[in-house]
Length: 332
Ligand SMILES: C[S@@+](CC[C@H](N)C(=O)[O-])C[C@H]1O[C@@H](n2cnc3c(N)ncnc32)[C@H](O)[C@@H]1O
Image (cartoon, rainbow, N blue to C red):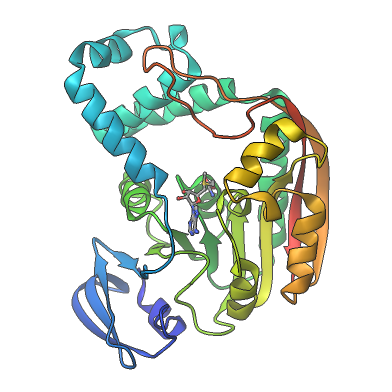
């Protein structure tokens, strides 16, 4: 993380001030440090350049950690499966198998081939309409950020598709965040490999309890973060608290009458931000003025399963074919 973030941050648990001990820095980048809350005494580390501001008390399902741990264990126990996965002609693999092969290549440091295979896999996982809508929303978001200045904080950055696009196209500093330290460590290696790391800071925190001071964030973005945050609760109030400028959220909505997907959406605690009506009501209730921009509809289908990695999936939703409304929420 970069030094400029220090004055934007506070204790995510009690909102007290932080006092910083920096052990290792490279110019403006803090590599190793400890931030201690003057009020409650909680200490937050910066390790490998990643500030970790996670708190106890919020249930957290880190799917990146779970999937990678499970995949590593499974392949250790079944080396013949790994040999088949890595030895097959890429285009003969199911898209899910191809995606996991790309992840394994990443783990071995073969980023170039991993990037090529992951892109091929993902282009075969989604309908052409889904891919076109997603691309159009990313373009629309980036175009709105061209005129502004200062850091852009991205929520629930995951593998960083939006972060990477912003770094390539905008001269602004970008803060990638996620509640999974594992995916941020992966992003760090990836961005460094492709020479994209200079302007990126990495912070691990839960979007429902962020470490930012009131109004500290001028521009907040997210690419499909909202539909992935389970039990969002007071999420939009928390974001309202920290954002003094604009929040741009790429998202998609399910049809309310789609019961096949609706059941799982409710079970997963995702219902409030996966439907247009409730999402807009949540934004308004949290004090945001929100506009729906670039609305587009496209068919969506369940992502294919692995055949060599039997049953391994990509996305949990949808579980049945549906039509999604894509849009860019512009909230102030
Ligand atoms: C699939 S990603 C979305 C795509 C990503 N923004 C991109 O541009 O590539 C969703 C991310 O949300 C993260 N996530 C889920 N719940 C979260 C929470 N409460 N706080 C922070 N991150 C969360 C997950 O770890 C995951 O990495």
